[in-house]
Image 1 (cartoon, one colour):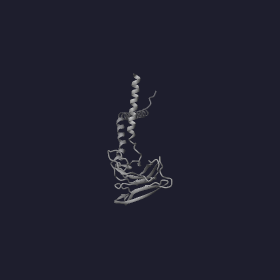
Image 2 (spheres, rainbow, N blue to C red):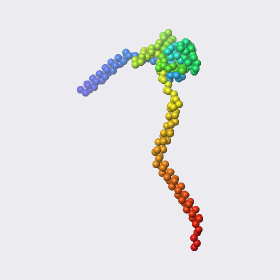
Image 3 (spheres, rainbow, N blue to C red):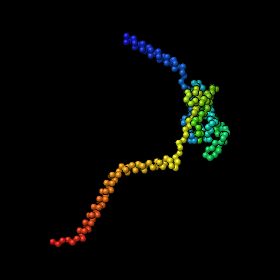
Image 4 (cartoon, rainbow, N blue to C red):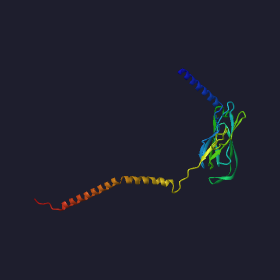
Length: 247
């Protein structure tokens, strides 16, 4: 009877597992997509970022990458790092209104970066490639969305252009997103540095209060010692002045 129940339990578990596998089998796992790394930075600062491109095709290689910089978040300085076997083309656009960088008014900003593979440098199946970029000063916005096109050797183009929806699920073809946080406020003349310098003084005061009785005893002992020395000196001087009694 016990054996029959155990067999039935195993059969039920196997059936449940088969159902779960069948259900999950229809839900394809989230595919890898182009990302920007790191994914967080500070507004107004400079940073080195890399667009990481995985190759998702089993038969074709990635031969071109196009990254569009957001129009609502222009960046004054954008420079690329050489990637062996790849060329890069930089497209610019007018900045309206101009943006100020280190006291200079810039009327043109980078609009698009296009990397193209040469020779045998294409990103092959099962591989990925990073394309480093230096940017700054970063705009004072919460996010920068880089719409990206990934071209394969068979002519297929993967469009990573969907923007994230706050509180929603990740899009099927999400664009790389850089999150920007506000810089910490700088300390003013009466700010952090002075407060930090005053902290040790507070600690000294606390220590002084704790050592008050011991300090008082030490001072009293010192005064008593000095008084004893004075009395001894006077007695010695008086003895020398008094005549020695004759026998």
